[in-house]
Amino acid sequence: MEVPILKQGAVLIATFQAALSDADLNQLRMGLVQQVVKFRSRAVIVDVTAMDVMDSFASRTLREIAHMIRLRGAETVIVGIQPEVAFAMVQLGLTLEGVATALDLEEGLAYLNEKFKTTN
Amino acid sequence: MSAGEIRVAINSDQDIVAARQKGRLMANEIGFSSGDATLIATAISELARNIVSYARKGEITIKMVNGLNRRGIVVVAADEGPGIPDIRQALRDGFSTSGSLGLGLPGVRRLMDEFEITSQPGRGTIVAVKKWRQ
Image (tube, rainbow over all chains, first blue to last red; front, side):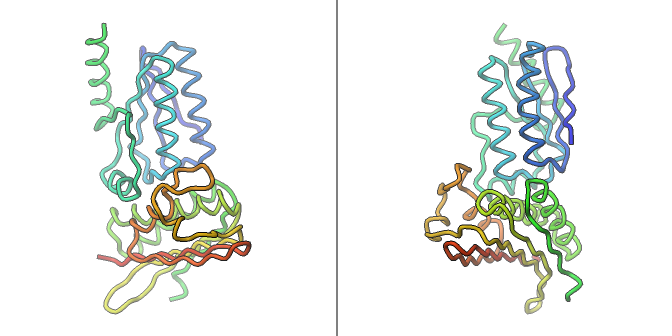
Protein backbone atom coordinates (compact mmCIF):
# COMPACT_ATOMS: atom_id res chain seq x y z
CA MET A 1 0.00 0.00 0.00
CA GLU A 2 1.48 3.31 -1.12
CA VAL A 3 1.45 6.27 1.21
CA PRO A 4 0.61 9.43 -0.72
CA ILE A 5 3.10 12.26 -0.21
CA LEU A 6 1.76 15.72 -1.02
CA LYS A 7 4.03 18.69 -1.69
CA GLN A 8 2.72 21.94 -0.29
CA GLY A 9 5.35 24.62 -0.79
CA ALA A 10 8.31 23.83 1.44
CA VAL A 11 6.31 21.25 3.37
CA LEU A 12 5.73 17.59 2.51
CA ILE A 13 2.60 15.96 3.85
CA ALA A 14 2.43 12.17 4.14
CA THR A 15 -0.91 10.62 5.03
CA PHE A 16 -0.87 7.17 6.64
CA GLN A 17 -3.59 4.62 6.05
CA ALA A 18 -4.84 2.15 8.62
CA ALA A 19 -3.29 -1.06 7.41
CA LEU A 20 0.36 -0.28 6.85
CA SER A 21 2.70 -3.26 6.96
CA ASP A 22 6.30 -3.04 8.13
CA ALA A 23 7.39 -3.09 4.49
CA ASP A 24 5.10 -0.14 3.71
CA LEU A 25 6.54 1.80 6.64
CA ASN A 26 10.11 1.10 5.55
CA GLN A 27 9.28 2.20 2.04
CA LEU A 28 7.71 5.38 3.32
CA ARG A 29 10.76 6.14 5.42
CA MET A 30 13.01 5.96 2.38
CA GLY A 31 10.53 7.80 0.15
CA LEU A 32 10.14 10.69 2.56
CA VAL A 33 13.84 11.23 3.10
CA GLN A 34 14.46 11.10 -0.66
CA GLN A 35 11.73 13.63 -1.36
CA VAL A 36 12.98 15.98 1.34
CA VAL A 37 16.30 15.97 -0.49
CA LYS A 38 14.74 16.30 -3.95
CA PHE A 39 12.43 19.20 -3.11
CA ARG A 40 14.73 20.80 -0.51
CA SER A 41 11.74 20.68 1.85
CA ARG A 42 11.96 22.45 5.17
CA ALA A 43 9.41 20.33 6.94
CA VAL A 44 7.45 17.08 6.84
CA ILE A 45 4.04 16.50 8.34
CA VAL A 46 3.09 12.87 8.92
CA ASP A 47 -0.66 12.54 9.33
CA VAL A 48 -1.52 9.36 11.26
CA THR A 49 -5.21 10.15 11.83
CA ALA A 50 -6.29 6.95 10.06
CA MET A 51 -3.88 4.68 11.93
CA ASP A 52 -5.83 2.43 14.26
CA VAL A 53 -2.80 0.79 15.85
CA MET A 54 0.60 2.25 16.60
CA ASP A 55 2.79 -0.59 17.73
CA SER A 56 6.49 -0.63 18.58
CA PHE A 57 7.58 -0.91 14.97
CA ALA A 58 5.39 1.93 13.71
CA SER A 59 6.46 4.31 16.44
CA ARG A 60 10.12 3.41 16.02
CA THR A 61 9.80 4.07 12.29
CA LEU A 62 8.20 7.46 12.96
CA ARG A 63 11.04 8.36 15.30
CA GLU A 64 13.59 7.28 12.72
CA ILE A 65 11.88 9.34 10.03
CA ALA A 66 11.96 12.42 12.27
CA HIS A 67 15.61 11.91 13.11
CA MET A 68 16.70 11.35 9.53
CA ILE A 69 14.81 14.41 8.39
CA ARG A 70 16.38 16.46 11.17
CA LEU A 71 19.80 15.42 9.89
CA ARG A 72 18.76 16.97 6.60
CA GLY A 73 18.05 20.20 8.47
CA ALA A 74 14.28 19.91 8.17
CA GLU A 75 11.54 19.54 10.74
CA THR A 76 8.99 16.73 11.26
CA VAL A 77 5.59 17.00 12.91
CA ILE A 78 3.40 13.97 13.62
CA VAL A 79 -0.26 14.92 13.59
CA GLY A 80 -3.53 13.16 14.33
CA ILE A 81 -2.63 10.49 16.90
CA GLN A 82 -6.05 9.30 18.04
CA PRO A 83 -6.81 9.40 21.78
CA GLU A 84 -7.26 5.61 21.95
CA VAL A 85 -4.03 5.06 20.07
CA ALA A 86 -2.22 7.45 22.41
CA PHE A 87 -3.58 5.51 25.38
CA ALA A 88 -2.41 2.19 23.95
CA MET A 89 1.02 3.64 23.14
CA VAL A 90 1.49 4.80 26.72
CA GLN A 91 0.39 1.42 28.10
CA LEU A 92 2.83 -0.29 25.79
CA GLY A 93 5.60 2.05 26.92
CA LEU A 94 6.09 3.79 23.59
CA THR A 95 7.09 7.41 23.37
CA LEU A 96 7.84 9.71 20.49
CA GLU A 97 10.44 11.56 22.50
CA GLY A 98 12.11 14.38 20.66
CA VAL A 99 9.50 14.39 17.90
CA ALA A 100 7.07 17.28 17.51
CA THR A 101 3.39 16.37 17.56
CA ALA A 102 0.24 18.38 16.90
CA LEU A 103 -3.49 17.77 17.16
CA ASP A 104 -4.22 17.76 13.45
CA LEU A 105 -2.96 18.92 10.06
CA GLU A 106 -4.08 22.49 10.65
CA GLU A 107 -2.29 22.72 14.00
CA GLY A 108 0.77 21.09 12.48
CA LEU A 109 0.95 23.69 9.73
CA ALA A 110 0.41 26.49 12.28
CA TYR A 111 3.24 25.09 14.41
CA LEU A 112 5.58 25.06 11.41
CA ASN A 113 4.62 28.58 10.33
CA GLU A 114 5.42 29.83 13.79
CA LYS A 115 8.71 27.96 13.81
CA PHE A 116 9.79 29.28 10.41
CA LYS A 117 8.90 32.82 11.45
CA THR A 118 11.14 32.71 14.50
CA THR A 119 14.08 31.12 12.71
CA ASN A 120 13.98 33.57 9.80
CA MET B 1 -18.85 -21.11 21.37
CA SER B 2 -16.66 -22.60 18.68
CA ALA B 3 -18.02 -20.13 16.13
CA GLY B 4 -16.08 -17.41 17.84
CA GLU B 5 -12.61 -18.64 17.03
CA ILE B 6 -10.24 -17.22 14.47
CA ARG B 7 -6.85 -18.58 13.53
CA VAL B 8 -4.33 -16.49 11.67
CA ALA B 9 -1.12 -18.00 10.34
CA ILE B 10 1.78 -15.64 10.94
CA ASN B 11 4.49 -15.89 8.30
CA SER B 12 5.29 -12.30 7.35
CA ASP B 13 4.78 -8.68 8.31
CA GLN B 14 1.58 -8.62 6.22
CA ASP B 15 0.10 -11.21 8.55
CA ILE B 16 0.71 -8.92 11.54
CA VAL B 17 -1.72 -6.43 10.02
CA ALA B 18 -4.26 -9.17 9.20
CA ALA B 19 -4.10 -10.59 12.74
CA ARG B 20 -4.69 -7.29 14.48
CA GLN B 21 -7.53 -6.36 12.13
CA LYS B 22 -9.26 -9.68 12.79
CA GLY B 23 -8.68 -9.22 16.50
CA ARG B 24 -10.30 -5.81 16.46
CA LEU B 25 -13.34 -7.17 14.59
CA MET B 26 -13.70 -9.95 17.15
CA ALA B 27 -13.33 -7.46 20.03
CA ASN B 28 -16.06 -5.31 18.51
CA GLU B 29 -18.33 -8.34 18.13
CA ILE B 30 -17.83 -9.28 21.77
CA GLY B 31 -18.82 -5.76 22.71
CA PHE B 32 -15.56 -4.20 23.84
CA SER B 33 -15.34 -0.42 23.76
CA SER B 34 -13.35 0.91 20.84
CA GLY B 35 -10.65 1.98 23.31
CA ASP B 36 -10.28 -1.56 24.60
CA ALA B 37 -10.45 -2.91 21.04
CA THR B 38 -7.46 -0.69 20.25
CA LEU B 39 -5.55 -2.10 23.25
CA ILE B 40 -6.35 -5.65 22.11
CA ALA B 41 -5.37 -4.93 18.49
CA THR B 42 -2.11 -3.38 19.68
CA ALA B 43 -1.33 -6.39 21.87
CA ILE B 44 -1.99 -8.74 18.94
CA SER B 45 0.28 -6.64 16.75
CA GLU B 46 3.13 -6.99 19.26
CA LEU B 47 2.58 -10.73 19.76
CA ALA B 48 2.51 -11.32 16.00
CA ARG B 49 5.60 -9.18 15.63
CA ASN B 50 7.43 -11.31 18.21
CA ILE B 51 6.59 -14.41 16.17
CA VAL B 52 7.93 -12.86 12.96
CA SER B 53 11.06 -11.49 14.65
CA TYR B 54 12.05 -14.49 16.73
CA ALA B 55 10.38 -17.59 15.30
CA ARG B 56 9.65 -16.47 11.71
CA LYS B 57 6.36 -18.33 11.68
CA GLY B 58 3.61 -19.31 14.02
CA GLU B 59 -0.07 -18.87 14.64
CA ILE B 60 -2.37 -16.50 16.46
CA THR B 61 -5.69 -17.78 17.75
CA ILE B 62 -8.33 -15.31 18.86
CA LYS B 63 -11.49 -16.42 20.60
CA MET B 64 -14.26 -15.35 22.87
CA VAL B 65 -14.30 -16.62 26.45
CA ASN B 66 -17.14 -16.71 28.93
CA GLY B 67 -16.24 -16.13 32.53
CA LEU B 68 -18.46 -15.85 35.56
CA ASN B 69 -20.87 -13.06 34.64
CA ARG B 70 -18.49 -11.68 32.12
CA ARG B 71 -17.23 -12.04 28.64
CA GLY B 72 -13.77 -11.64 27.32
CA ILE B 73 -11.32 -12.29 24.57
CA VAL B 74 -8.36 -14.61 24.61
CA VAL B 75 -5.43 -14.35 22.25
CA VAL B 76 -2.93 -17.18 21.97
CA ALA B 77 0.31 -16.67 20.09
CA ALA B 78 2.11 -19.94 19.43
CA ASP B 79 5.31 -20.67 17.60
CA GLU B 80 7.89 -23.41 17.27
CA GLY B 81 10.80 -21.02 17.33
CA PRO B 82 13.92 -20.97 19.47
CA GLY B 83 12.01 -20.37 22.70
CA ILE B 84 12.95 -18.01 25.49
CA PRO B 85 15.72 -19.25 27.78
CA ASP B 86 15.01 -16.73 30.53
CA ILE B 87 11.36 -15.72 30.72
CA ARG B 88 11.82 -13.49 33.73
CA GLN B 89 14.39 -11.48 31.85
CA ALA B 90 12.15 -11.30 28.76
CA LEU B 91 9.36 -9.86 30.89
CA ARG B 92 11.54 -7.05 32.13
CA ASP B 93 11.13 -3.68 30.42
CA GLY B 94 13.92 -2.86 28.04
CA PHE B 95 15.00 -6.42 27.34
CA SER B 96 15.40 -7.56 23.76
CA THR B 97 17.57 -9.97 21.85
CA SER B 98 16.50 -9.08 18.33
CA GLY B 99 17.53 -5.45 18.38
CA SER B 100 13.92 -4.40 18.57
CA LEU B 101 12.58 -2.03 21.18
CA GLY B 102 12.38 -4.77 23.76
CA LEU B 103 9.02 -3.59 24.98
CA GLY B 104 7.07 -6.44 23.50
CA LEU B 105 6.17 -8.77 26.32
CA PRO B 106 6.00 -6.42 29.32
CA GLY B 107 4.05 -3.97 27.16
CA VAL B 108 1.57 -6.64 26.07
CA ARG B 109 1.15 -7.62 29.71
CA ARG B 110 0.13 -4.07 30.57
CA LEU B 111 -2.33 -3.87 27.68
CA MET B 112 -4.23 -6.98 28.73
CA ASP B 113 -5.77 -8.26 31.99
CA GLU B 114 -4.23 -11.71 32.13
CA PHE B 115 -0.95 -12.95 30.78
CA GLU B 116 0.54 -16.43 30.63
CA ILE B 117 3.67 -17.62 28.94
CA THR B 118 5.25 -21.01 28.46
CA SER B 119 8.43 -21.48 26.56
CA GLN B 120 10.84 -24.29 25.97
CA PRO B 121 14.23 -23.54 24.49
CA GLY B 122 14.45 -25.17 21.06
CA ARG B 123 10.75 -26.03 21.06
CA GLY B 124 8.81 -22.82 20.97
CA THR B 125 6.79 -20.32 22.88
CA ILE B 126 3.12 -19.94 23.71
CA VAL B 127 1.80 -16.66 25.02
CA ALA B 128 -1.85 -16.52 26.10
CA VAL B 129 -3.45 -13.21 27.03
CA LYS B 130 -6.96 -12.34 28.11
CA LYS B 131 -8.97 -9.20 28.43
CA TRP B 132 -12.37 -8.96 30.08
CA ARG B 133 -15.13 -6.65 28.93
CA GLN B 134 -15.63 -3.79 31.34
